[in-house]
Length: 321
Image (cartoon, rainbow, N blue to C red; front, side):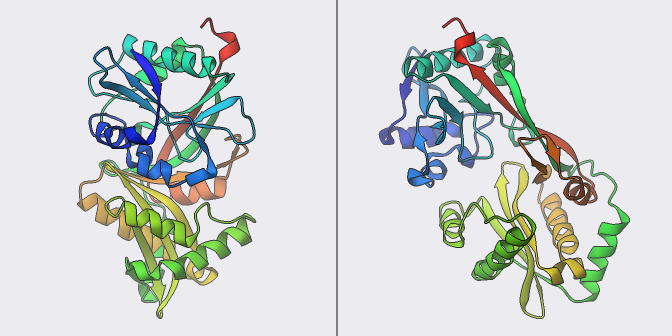
């Protein structure tokens, strides 16, 4: 097997290959990664077998602040090596070794690997985690997400139930109308500015552009009261998992229990539609070392449990390449 540098001519083959893998998602697609434009210096790799068929792809980019660092992938929640169905074990150890050798030969000193959590894998395939162990990788970060197993949902707290009932009593309505997204984005921007002092990663124009690319994978669900958007969520549909990418509520929405009502609506809808997991997202700050317990408890109150997002580092100087 041998790695080759990704180029635009491989985009179609790359995206077609994702359908042959147990862990590839639309976040690994070239269309999603290219959407970031010049925000990152792409350093992705395609690994070919002896017959020059794609064995694995490795979405990656150079870290903007540390030129000697490769990250898979800085523009995505997770990255990692995505390999052909039926491949694993020692082959994955060799594959990751070849990728590390490639980046080392390019002058890089470290690789950071954001593993795909098991709820986004379509079949058991933790072979890359084993390969990381074999190569002496260090786990430098671990984030905690709250996720519902829709086949065995945990107990819903009384507070979440009361909030949903209050919203229903006050005639809060659910809408998926895309034309309401700019109004929801104003709520989101205000929410993030007030609570966290920051802005959304995506502007309203950017999220609408992403939606135009991935209409099957992105959905907007909003709560309205008296014709005004008071809360909402952006959902990423990834295989059998539904992920809440953005969550926001106005002050009025919080007082009316709008998110309780909205999430219960979504959970019931996707459970009935055959989804397996409903993931609320991570609740961490400070490279995983600080847990926002209030946020985690809110999400856990819907019957969720913990799922970790693992981050690994390979220091090339410690390896015999």
